[in-house]
Image (cartoon, rainbow, N blue to C red; front, side, top):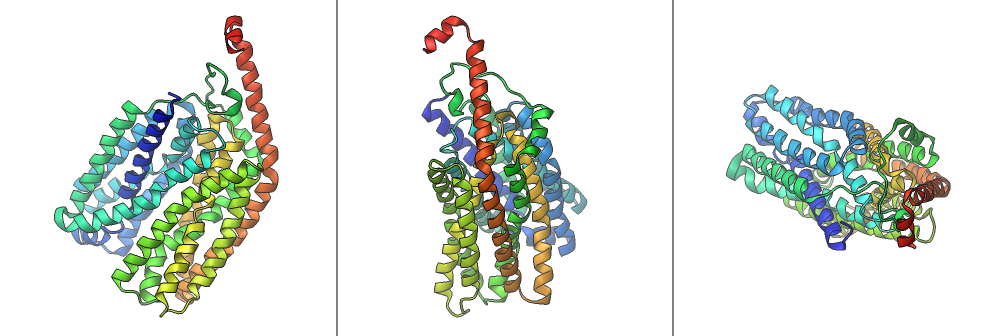
Length: 437
């Protein structure tokens, strides 16, 4: 199970899960108009559809985190994929708007299933390469967005919006089978350097004392606070940048599509590049990942300020600067996940990331509303700039503080893992110890 080929099969399977799941999750945007026409609903009612899934997903983050730390993560991921496929099918066959509202809200159940995925990967790959692996996996999110948009726009006139949901729902059920059969559970802590020389690793399960200890780690608390604000720019850009291009920069639909496709593809590369740079600097200093995140968010703030002030008629230069901005935007993401796992015990890593994601979800819900209120009284340009620049500057301060605190928490985890390794060696039979020597 530690073979390089099998580890990459696991990465491929989980990448496919994230790619197709994100495609399914974001299909609702391009399919909004035909869905509204089918049920005869207005924007407020359609907004309730979006909100329902977000609320369900946010509420269930802590539950998924606990389940992943308590039970087999691979099997739970297969269950999440099955739930995704099943609830999407329910959305496709919903005969009335109330039924569609309830079924679409139920799709949020599996939206909070990612903490276990990252936790499982952490037991297949050691600390010094996790950043680039997480960056590679997170590539699936923007690529899934593009895939969903292409699938929806190309197929909705051919098979209808219900048919598109049937396709993605079927893929979810099929992928559930692949994960259930093909992805095996790894012992928690298996890839930690201190345990590398052991023939067997003990079984460590979630316990409340260890989980509550998460809130005593100062680095983690700073990252939790940063997470609340860190998603403001993401959701402001996601919900409002299309409209900004159309209304305030007078882009045609084709120009918007070309601009956003290029920007999203460049942004996607930023996940892997950011993770790889974080790994590189982390090998030289335990503060490395967070220093990379600090520099990246500051660069994003400066570049966004320059980009949105480019004259409207200069579309080529605007596109170049937007792409340059986009590559820095996701730099922090793989480094935050890696840092969380650098300071938490293997049996509570899903819980730690679930808490982070829950807090981020709270921030996600506020950002589009705040941006809309600013735009009403000023402009979308001002709303995007005010939220993105101020938030990224604030996050740079949080990342700097976390970087200052991180070495102590990382050293504490490494000592805990050495203690465990020593306990494991003492528990071996004498002939096993001699065999290792």
